[in-house]
Amino acid sequence: MATSFSFGGGKRRGGRNFRRNNDPYAHIRRNQRIRVPEIRVISPEGKQLGVLPTEKALTLAQQFNLDLVEVAPQARPPVCRIMDFGKYVYEESKKSSHSKSTASKIKEVELSPRIDDHDLVTKLRHAEEFLNEGAKVKLRLKFRGREMAHTEIGFQVMTRAIEELVGMGHADSEPKLNGRQINVMMTPHPANKRKLKYYTPKAKGPAPDEHKSSGDAPADDEASDES
Image 1 (tube, rainbow, N blue to C red):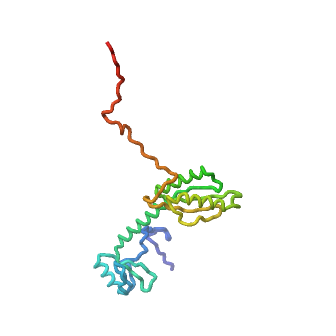
Image 2 (cartoon, rainbow, N blue to C red):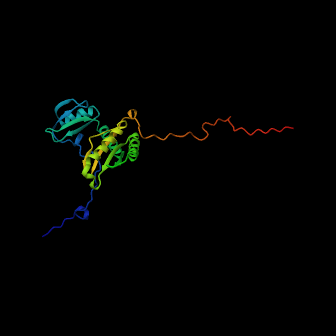
Image 3 (tube, rainbow, N blue to C red):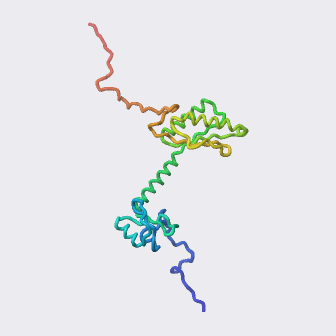
């Protein structure tokens, strides 16, 4: 005689009735989630405390009012550190946010192998402006058609551009040919070491009537009536 079973109160089997965990640190075992009997322990100051029973290490962490965090789960026994896990998460979040901010501050300046001096100066002015704002600048030189037969001309242009921008930043690496392009990333110098050569920041003009004193009223035309 066949017996029927119901699953999940009559809900369809295989239905996606679960909540996704969006915590990026959920995979890091800590405190009571560490189930192995013994672990290698690192103190809050980074000193090796040796292999201890997990319960003893957890008690030690609680005495410091800190967390016991697994930092090397693949080791035998696993390595755990006594630390402030909340502070660790905060610092990692700051690093991530800084990386995203830095990534968004990349500007691009495009060059060509046969660029004339006037256009090159214009491109360098833009590059200096971006570097002066603290952004990284990607110099990109693109070859078209038969220009690929003389890539050395492109390298000469790129080298000249880097040399002209030396007062504002430095190249992260040597220019590299990638397909039909030469690319190089430039990082700005610290603000107090930047020397502009082509770009002139716009000066803020004085506010209206800033230099006009209250006593300097325009003089009326003198009228002399001689009787």
